[in-house]
Length: 154
Image (tube, rainbow, N blue to C red; front, top):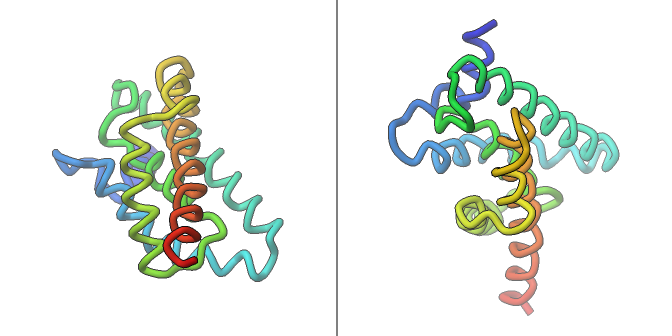
């Protein structure tokens, strides 16, 4: 079970890359976005429930991985970047423009941690603290990506 948790938490061991692990973890989410996005055409409710379940699962996995690594918000844990990026791309078509625009905006906001992401990062313990700041940054990124796309294409 230890290996499975670390495999999932590290995005297939991408988190073990010694530099920019969060950036590489976000890249792991690209194919997940492309595979997950068509679900919304089956059922919007199922699409949203699946995202909420991914976030809840990521919180659990990140919490277990923190215990195993004995590090708070270890750079090895990138599942938070994966679900954060999926939030950045919710209801966006899987085009290269959306994929890359959301990537750069998400990475910037993941570093800047706009409120309440910074508060969550500093004050919320366990896996929820690891994951939810990225979810907030992802949802902000989603809004900015949409606004930027609307501004560029009007």
